[in-house]
Length: 190
Figure 1 (cartoon, rainbow, N blue to C red):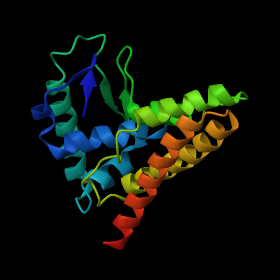
Figure 2: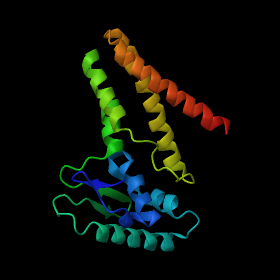
Figure 3: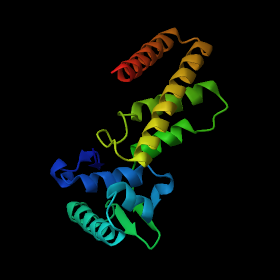
Figure 4: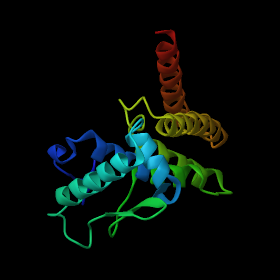
């Protein structure tokens, strides 16, 4: 889902899968930027470069049209350069994958503060990155990394809750972790 000022942008705006996928690819990339070659190969595998470049420009144009009603100061931009395609957030734009990673990587020396960052990260996590897009190695790798981070911080949160003598929180986290591990086991057994 794509939201601006806490309101979802009409889902019809993203009816074209390439528009949705371009945003997913850029917003999950480090520094919100991806090489143009990687974008082209991810979105239009098997297409010749000229055709894929043309489709990229059409897709960016479609996204810009979809965001025309968003106030200019809030409107994110997609910049297509010679070598990179970059997502430039609008004012106060928050990207869930970037916020999740920020909380996961927060450097905290105090257990209570670290636990707070982990809880924020877990609250942000809304599910797998780009569900239904299974034919892209770049997205598959990012999705797997995010899932691994989620499991890792859940284990860390459990240890911290026990260390801080918060048994109710530890029990809640243990249940969530057990559910996550059960879902992973079920998915691998299918």
